[in-house]
Image (cartoon, rainbow, N blue to C red; front, side):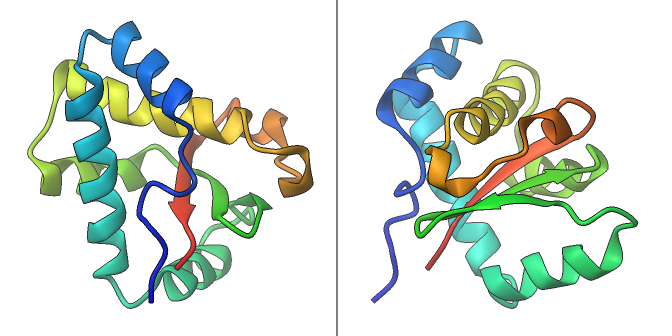
Length: 128
């Protein structure tokens, strides 16, 4: 059995990011769920995290918990994801914002290095 795609996302964080960008919470929730599902359709969350950790000059893993991986990736990594979702403007901004907000709001046990999120794009991947 796999974990719910939204397990790593707090309802209040979703609502705040949606409100900030003028997107309905229901729409943003759907985008987050679809994005998580699309990532799971790749070779596997653990595999993609492993690949990114070996591919990029600086290890993008900035924290992890039982529920999620927290990554700081070059912004271009998001381009393929938003293109697959067919989104731009406020929806794109809201999706990236919810990932950034959620990474910064992660429980202390996750050990997220927030300073690393300042120069890169946050990506939160719910662990299966």
